[in-house]
Image (cartoon, rainbow, N blue to C red):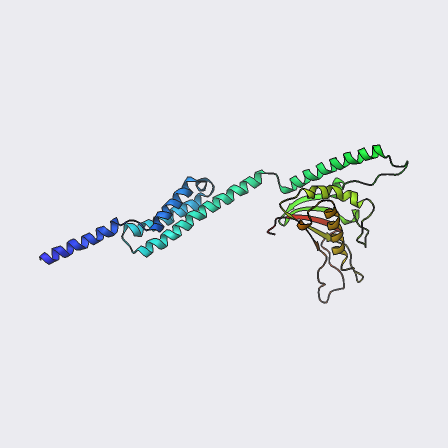
Length: 273
């Protein structure tokens, strides 16, 4: 009888010892990470994710309180930590998205730079004209692309400046038309201020049929790149691509495919793209 009493007392002591043992480090970390998430932006910007993190933390606390094996507590604590971290990441992502939605797009910034460059070049042109007037009857070259001839748009690949190729090149050649350099000067000046993104010069021609010049698109892109570099655009940031360099479909007529009217597209992209 005495042995039975001692045995029962021993079992009670063992149970109490398990319940009163300090929580594993992983569970302590899970509590800290959840508290940080709950005190931050997650409650406002990612409430559902924070709720799931709370459920995961409770699931980790339960086996500890019931004296379950330590490995089970650690495994659930690890999941709770990841759930709280996910809530923080989702909150930060939502905050960034909201800030970008409120801020003007990158295209707006490029448009402003282009407008400022055109104003500066126009002032320079007027000053030069006063100092050295053109002969009577001779018109100065067109300076800067007209509003209807240039577009700036934000696309998934980056900010895209599009100029009709017909304003810069003859229909079947890669050298500039008269006045083309003057039209590109504002673009070059605006891009010379670019410090964060890489610049890709792409061209699209309207050449079709059996007499297609397969290198025309790329030569035009090279010509524009050389112009930009000669006007203080960082050469390490500028690359070229010919949009028409596509294989012809097997069995189809020997035509070069084209995805739109002839154009010169200067695409500004982040370094990771």
